[in-house]
Image (tube, rainbow, N blue to C red):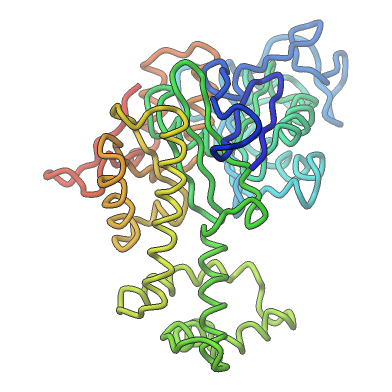
Length: 407
């Protein structure tokens, strides 16, 4: 793993023995959310005055709605919420996934723009004028400082907010699952990532560039691994596994190799592979050894990420929230969740695992409200709009209700 140091002082985790110091650096509170770049009129960097609208330009004057434009850009979908200063959710929109590595920052913003226009229209706001106070963007596939910088520049040029902040979506998950900047979060959705944060601003992060930087798992990784084992079982290179028949049956084909052929020929959309995560868990629940090993490997990876972050931030000896989220974890599969919590109980007994089941855009919105000085009542109102926000333990309370986090 490498270390990047930027003017935002975000520290990336490095292995022991790295030629660089392994001590985390100091960053103000929530990383990425201290960057305010006002122009001459208090408008975000890259904005333009005296325009009639369109083309990413804005006119001068006050924002139309004091509050936050929250953006959660995920691998599989993008969610946007316009939230008033008092925590009221004024409008929401959902679109396709966010892929700046493929489309570039400007191209990716082009996919977000119609969603912003949708929430503005729902809220009765005028196009071409400054929408709100703060843009708070928590984005997947924004893993390096240069990626944050490029996306920030693209967002700041839009007529969306007076100030803008961009950070990785895992920080949004952490905020959704805690009442302050303290804890570790692991997102396991299409991909996998982990961040840690102390109240003094020290952070721990991973490059999270997939197999190139040592990552394993997430929905995409698990589905690919299931296909790999199933295909090898069919042609004799691997041990038999019920995954072969299960994968074929799911797609209505003879087996895993037939599924691979259909994807190769364009007869089956490759993005549908993520559906195999459910097949993998079903097969594991039926006792298939190969499927069980894959689930166990995912639990091990989630735990390793958590422990490294806790260790780097010197949090192993104190009660620390460990926030688990993303589609794979939010599904609350007992084979995975029980495995993770058992591993954490053994290796980090003071860790406090909890599962966020609310839409990740909640975290982005909370970060935005934090920045603009919203009241605790406003944050409570926002959380109330997402009634299944948090599970502080694996099992529901005795009364069957979930205990929400309260800021």
